[in-house]
Length: 321
Image (cartoon, rainbow, N blue to C red; front, side):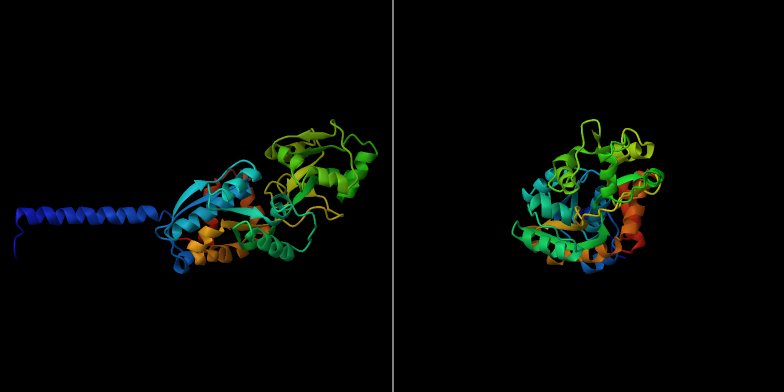
């Protein structure tokens, strides 16, 4: 057996250390083990920034996206949990982030300034996708779940008051019942698809004593206690509805649009990796209303971290390892 001279030994040792270092770096880049998505999509070498709004559902979707991109070899910057829809949209359009999950109804009314009402979810998605293309924003496949705004009330109180629809709630207010009170969050008061349009549609007036503005997360316990409001703005897929025994009223005049979610990506980013559309195609169909409520509940009620909930679901679906 030929013995290596000292310089050769040193060179061999250096090569071994370098190889180990490169392997470690490669593993560090892929922080999420690959699954079925990574077999179809390779984003090695790309750096992407993912954003999201501040409530549980948005943070879960954001964390799912980060995990999936990491599994394909991308380096991902986390900008989840940004407060306010307008701030996240502005971050996308100005290039501060590359993608985030948005809702069709929000885009149609708020960003595209469309006043027409489109009740069919697929038709609305197609219209939003086509219109937003002019803003250099690409919409990936939509989810089956529709996280529309709704008016919530404790189920037993709804039965006591004989309230099933938003028109029934308006009647409670008009007859001067002290329980005709409404909680909303600050964003809802100023949105094009928010409070003012709702009041106009249902020919409803609320004085200062009947209207309470608070953080969205504080509305749910307020409704459960019926204090300081009996009725309130809620989201249809929120995980707290069932545990708190809250019901949602029927929007009998069809004011609220469909709010199906989809990953919105800057078009220049999508063009860099055309197969990125597979992320939406493989993930979105699994996110039904029942599934999204359950995932939201694990965070909002079960106090599990959004990242843990997101990764656990993706592993169950085989999308990551």
